[in-house]
Image (cartoon, rainbow, N blue to C red):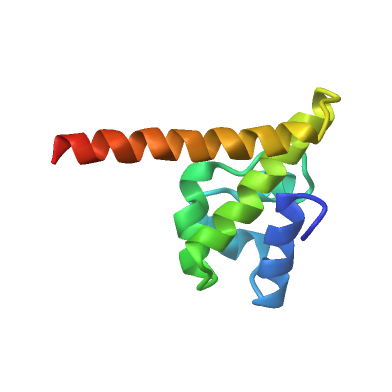
Length: 108
């Protein structure tokens, strides 16, 4: 776990020997924006997760976990919300999956 998702990207980039410009080109970003992402001044675009996973041969589900946990943590911190929100959110996700599964079975 890194302090924020941008640090995770920086670690991947440097470990694999990419410059900001090289990785930015692979992700469709200019080096200035990638630098802002790595420094936590700009958020990474969720639409680029698949590209990032491909560039570094990462499991997309693990990458999503890292990405979304960063978003959740920032929201909870910014709103001074209790971490109990995470437990309630987990229950809501299970509920939504149940409802979706029921709806899918009715379509069949």
